Length: 332
Image (cartoon, rainbow, N blue to C red; front, side):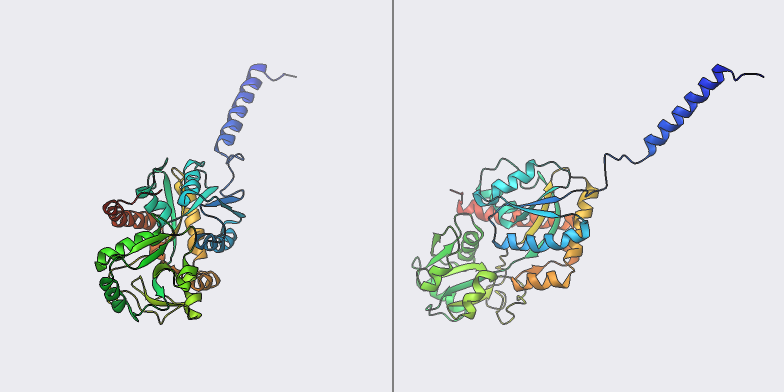
């Protein structure tokens, strides 16, 4: 009987080993499971209970259904949102740390604060979520009954009225500065750590420019006057309130919009998956109803994309940074 040649056997083994190695090379790596394979954290750069926090919690609750993973909300307030936003900028670009952002965090802070990150270059836009138009309101005893009368009253009483704001460089402060420029009126600003609504109801200040969720309960209680919605369209939760365009101040559009961002260099495939989950969530009737109850307007689908968010942010920068510079506004 003739025995197999050892040389041939060794050659067969080498060929087989090479074939196995090639197959393993082509096979999907078990070390990189499909995204997402673990919980995702969304950093909300403000304390719990605020408008942005509530909206993101509603969004996250539904997004986890699309993504198949829990979403953890991490509230990290401080410095008008810049501390939490900075944490997002420094996070690993792997899709497991996202950030809630807004006009304040991703536009205004870039003009009024010395930041250790860039509000544009250090983030990847994910989705533009919702828009919260601001309302122009006054104390109940204000003589004016509509916006035109109110502007005339301010002109007749220069430097006598006061507006309550959320602080220097806050959205309500910038709204007041813009309002003064458009109407050629003059009044003072009183900064508050939280809302100034209690002092408006008490008549200690004369006006505010604030969000619907804060304003409407006092309107329904008959405690204040509401003159107009600072937007192109009326809000669903209060359809009887006229817009500024209808009330004689066209173009005074002020809204605190909300969006999702990821750290710079997050892969496009991950961004696309997150955006698809957000867009799917925003079609949910229950989510839309809850947003409407808060006075929020959901953007149309073509404005919910990462590209649309980038364009929107740039347009807001071009609008607000010159106003901030002209007014010499710097955060304390």
